[in-house]
Amino acid sequence: MTKLSRRHFLAAGAAGALLPLAMPAVSRAQARELRLGLITPVGHSWNDAALRLADVLKEQTDGRLTMTVFHSGQLGNEPAMMQQLQSGALDMGIIQAAELGSRVDHIAAINAPYLVNSTEAVAKFVRTPQVLELLDVLPAETGTVGLGWLITGMRAVFSAKPIDSVAGLNGMKLRINPTPVYRDFYQNLGAAPTPIPTPQVFDAMSNGQVDGLEADIEFSWNQRFDKVAKSILQMNALFMPAAAIASGRVWAGMPDADKELISASVKTVLDEQIDSLASEEPGLIEKFRETGIAMHEVPQADKEASIEAFDKIWLPKAPVIAELRKIGAEL
Image (cartoon, rainbow, N blue to C red; front, side, top):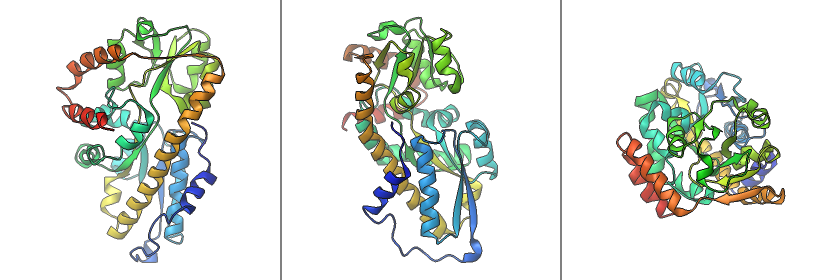
């Protein structure tokens, strides 16, 4: 996705009141600075959403609540930030479902393949009550409080060699997100998941250390992986949401009025991020087509075989996947 500019967010906010102007009064003595951590870099839509949240909180409280955003993993990787959230050393975070799902199978269900078939459907899916309720397990399981989902688009395979079907994945050294869901899905297709740090993937594809990358369209266009790929296989199988979460320890000590204000502010900002990404992704796909790179889609028969193989592993661990597929099918 193209960079979500702060101007875009401000324009979205100007179109309608972000929040009611009359919020519950809280004593100025309770002024505080919040700290939010995430791993994405400046220019990523999640990072822009975090900065937008800081602006909204400052505006809505006349400067009583401020927020510092620590982007690009400045506070460590996601496991490190989860420890900080659990201890109360970090107030809030934007944490990928992959990290949360590695701790809680119920959360991992949102990463199951073929829940939805388009980014437009993703935008609707993550705002359904049932999908929002997935976050209800976080306080007991992780000591954090889930406030809502952010999204990426549907993911694709960028291959350093020409491929036109999932058969081309067999034997491919493929850089994927290391979450168990992604690993099982791609291993079932014959790929060999290969761990490579994100900043090194471009060079790894250039020198043959890996044969391909599995990623979303926004990230892949920003990093220009069309320069090292011969073809793009639009899997339309998986997407990677992230949750906006708060430290359970910090949340428990907040006045109810602040909890209400922060929750409402987060919802506003997340809605902006979701709508913007979904509306801009078709333009990014067209930009990839304009480069001349070959693009292919996975036929329905291959999708059904992948679902069957995946569900044998994951339905016993996360039965909610079946319910989520029904919800996605109606979108």
